[in-house]
Length: 520
Image 1 (spheres, rainbow, N blue to C red):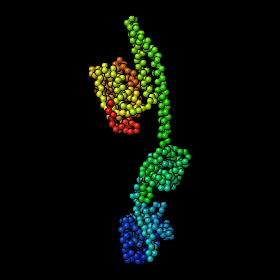
Image 2 (cartoon, helix red, strand yellow):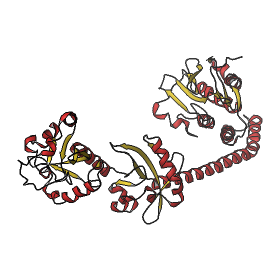
Image 3 (tube, one colour):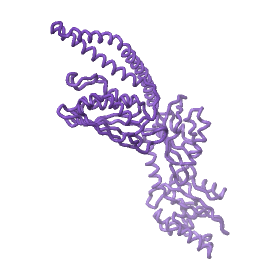
Image 4 (tube, rainbow, N blue to C red):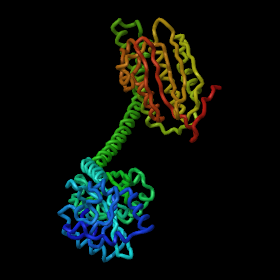
């Protein structure tokens, strides 16, 4: 109890007459004594000279003395020796301004047990006025456990990997850690007692008081400045972008706010670099799409000029020249036809990225009908069996959706088993805000190691002799689905058939479709 209750010489005769205490007699004294005795904290009452005139059972328990060892003795025996010399001054100060108040505001207080051990305390002082004079009643609370918890809290804050700053309601800084010193360039002694606005750029300070008051009115853990860019201000005047998490810290006396501050300079730099690279990639893709479109479009006419005469030459002079000539002409015609097919596919692929046709309500069933009509010859020749569920109506580009079904069904026809007819099933299942549409076949299947590769342009798993084609079909499917904000994937195993899945958004004109639309 540093700067405790007023004292007298510690050698005061223990047999001194305690007349003022004896004169607190009758009903009033008894009620007072019972209240003090029943108090949950240690209670010590002393006179102007610091003689102890009353203690309770909690005092005996807390200090290790019996009350007979305390009554009539100086309160100094409960005060660590290093604080005793200042007591007389504190005692006079209290008696010059008698009022209930906590003792030793701004100082750490300690008390001394009979066994010589010290412990931290909080003490409340209350004047008790009687006919015999004024006494001081001190309520003494052992705050050892609280100090232990506070110390653990400080250690946790100090060990935090981020800057940690704790402020009280008025915005004054009461606690910082080493990371704060490192991040802002201040020594902690320079921050204690300063307002948190010290760390806020000047252009934001005017509004900061309002944000702080709003947080204290709605105390809960949350991030600070949602939707705003936040900046910190270093001692050298430089600014840097930050993220801040706010957490209320409640004590028995008041509420504080602990702010965890993270420097996100590198993250911002990376985000800006990502945006820059994305924009460059978008420009590059546009250039490539433009080139592919122009090249494939402009190559069609000269290629037709080559392919047409070659085919006429083949028909007119077939068998009239020697076998080597027929072979050479056949190779030239085949190459010209394959090149024409490749250019057509490449043109279709580039058109998907360039298409500006408005999306509209599109019945997937009708898009599938158009695709099956385009494939009718191959379906009839192969004897393929098609089964289909009711397909939904979605917001889509009808031409692209038809092309998507045409490539997936055509893929199932191409990679069918030679010894049995193809069986192709088209289905649709609702999953949340998406439709998942599947095209399943009983064909030769795909090894899982090639699942990603098959969606790349010009990638083939078989020779052109086994399965003709340009290697653009599935890349075109992925591009179409991506243009519609969906995704496409495959499930398969060699010899066990293949199922392609793709998603389309179920929302139509801002409303989520409740069920699939039956085919007409």
